[in-house]
Length: 145
Image: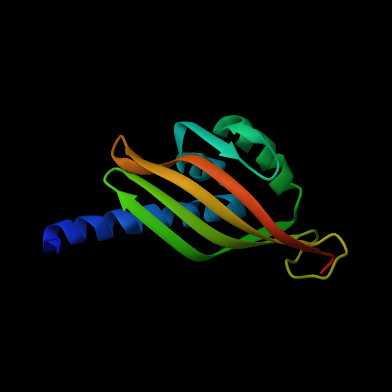
């Protein structure tokens, strides 16, 4: 059985890693693109539902796609984190609400709700945990709510 210090270190790492998708969601929903970018390493790679490539190219496509909505809300759900030293892997389920008109929640045939999973590879680099590779799996969608 690991010692208390080792367990605390792993729990602290697990909490910091698990926070990454929450910060990402907050950044997207608040249109804080610096916060979104800070979740990723300089050379991160993203295989997303819209595009695949270096993180900066991915975010350049994601930003206008998100900003066309009056509001979005990403609800992060089930999460499984595995820590291996200064590397981690994580799968996070999310439901993302995309509201076409304000106020958010107003009915519109253009509203969209999607269920996705984020498969992240994470590393401890330069004093913090960052996503180095992300694969986004689109599981389902409902339009016109």
